[in-house]
Amino acid sequence: MERMRQKSKQRRILSKPCFQDFDRHNNGHVPKSRFRQCLTYLMLSGSEKELAVIEQKFTDNIGFNYVAFLKELQPGGEPQLKYNSLLSERTMLTEFRSTPSDTQPADIDKVLMKIKTKVWKERMRLLEFMRDYDKLRAGRILKSVFRRSLDMCKLMLVDSEVAALEIRYRSAKDPNCVDYLHFSEDIEAIFAMKGLEKNPLQKFEEFKPPIEVDENKLSPEKEVLLNMCMKRFAEKVRTNRMQLFPLFEDYDRVHNGMVSRSQFLRALTELDLGLVSEREFMVLFEKFDTKIGGRNDVNYLAFCDKIYDMAHFEKWRP
Image (cartoon, rainbow, N blue to C red; front, side):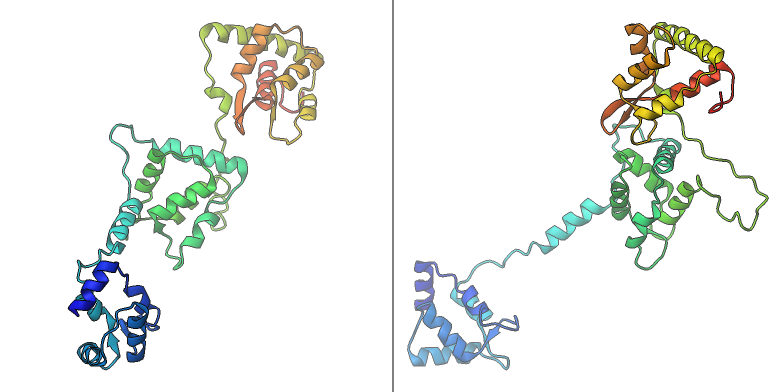
């Protein structure tokens, strides 16, 4: 053994893979004949008497224990298994991540309104993205899976908003899970009230998403200029009983209520609402600007509704 050990050390022989090729059951044993074949391949041959002594020492009922043989042939430290470290790292990554202390926690009401508005516009069902992860149909899924489902829905939520949802809908049975059924029911309540068939006389309030253009704040000077311009348009529309929507809809190819900046200017010119200065047009664009698909467009629906309100007649029927 000492002679084999020195030879293996001098030639830096990697012996274990050779034995593993013949270990079909992966139990650390090979047949006796394969043991001699491996020594011949590794050029660690010895006399017949020496090989017989080695076989007698390392052979048991299963076969030749090459693991014990290699421990004496090439002694070294125990191999460091990385499974435990990888498992702990994965657990740390998937466990609940609290809101950073340097950021303000998200308002759960604003987060729910943001999700409801997105769902109302795109008519999606969040339940379809989460139900497949609930194999036992228990009504709850892991927080890591809940985050993955929200990413698939493309709701564009930040970490603080997702953390607020996890706190709000944390499962009472398992703190590491989220009651996705309760969450889905609260969101889909914008379309229909649960249990309405049992109480048909109950009044259902229609969900009205917030108008995005209302969030566009202007300076006091620009607000005065905007009101003067809108009043001039409204007076023209009220006097001539004009229809605004058809002309804008001709430019709206995808029917999402948006037109480009140049199309908006062209429609104003064709409607003959009066001369619009460059400054007035910039204020109009800044007020009714809406970002869609990474591009800034004009929300002509909000513009027409505002004109109709100021003209004091019924929408869609001037």
